[in-house]
Length: 243
DNA sequence: ATGTGTTCCTGTCCGC
DNA sequence: TGCGGACAGGAACACA
Image (cartoon, rainbow, N blue to C red; front, side, top):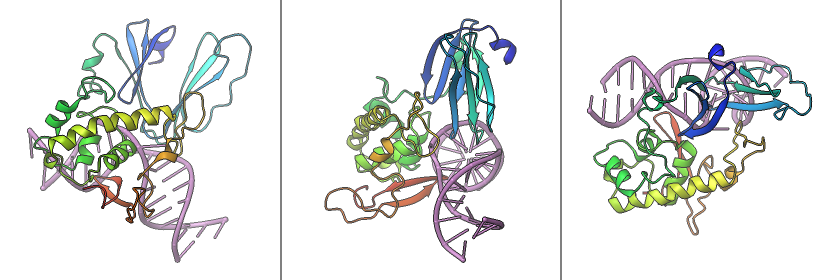
């Protein structure tokens, strides 16, 4: 991969689902997924004006990219669930990681009829359907939990058994949750940082995620938030408000 | 075909 | 302190 990156110029930086995509002037696109714990950091002198030393390589630094201007971009990932690949720009949609992805939740093709069709006949819990990147691309555990709480839908409910009106209501709720989270710079549980290095602060706005045993925030609701593991992932929900 | 459980890996935190 | 176990933002894969 190093030979194919050497001398290449980044012409565009994009995102698809949870993948970062850097188009190069070589006709290839660099794909990056941060997984759970991955992080890209910039050090040195991005503008090439001053001279700065780069920090010593840290534990779990896996990929280091040096630019002519003197900037160094480092990919660090303790758990190594992240990924990097280099693919043909023109045929990127056929790449095995991008091929089956569903619509962007903030885009136009993620709409009521799409979600109703995707839920129809599904026997799996709505929680796992919303985490399925083929249904909608880019939702993770936190935002699914939060969206289902706002929609008043239990994560345990079979997707195919939710009425169309309630499924439709999920669409703007998912958009709202994501828009608010982006506005807040994301959720910094541990590793996540904004692009500028600062912590995100949407974790302070969680209604259910990580709040097991705490009181539900719905007015007059006396229930405590529960945690239940569904296909290996924790779901947080209020058994009274979500049905 | 669909749906669920396991797996990859390291770090941190909690109870004993 | 030390040690074991649970758990962590993702997603491919094996298997029923």
